[in-house]
Image 1 (cartoon, rainbow, N blue to C red):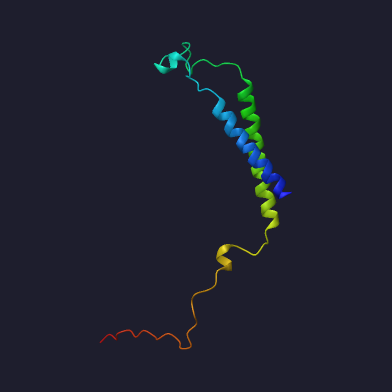
Image 2 (tube, one colour):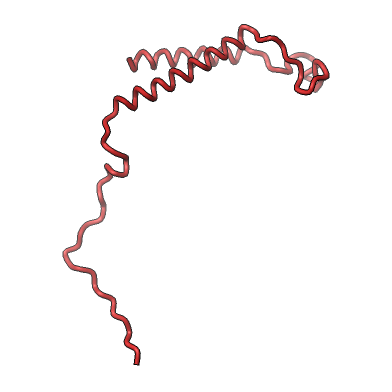
Length: 108
């Protein structure tokens, strides 16, 4: 199951990269090269959703779902042996002699 999810995740990732690179930017026309806007709206002109933008949305959702599925399946397959700090070997060795007592100066 993990191999299938990993393969699907890599394929979706490659598809997402290709679809994003095929899209044109917001100011890809000649007016955008000189700083002009297509119309006088506040945030610029908004076109209709193209096939590439819909494919990007679907690929991004699939990418997130496969990544989440891989994280959950990996977490379920690992053993519950505690944290990394709990598995670390202690480096402090026990001494056979008790620590020396500090003497305080006497007041006269």
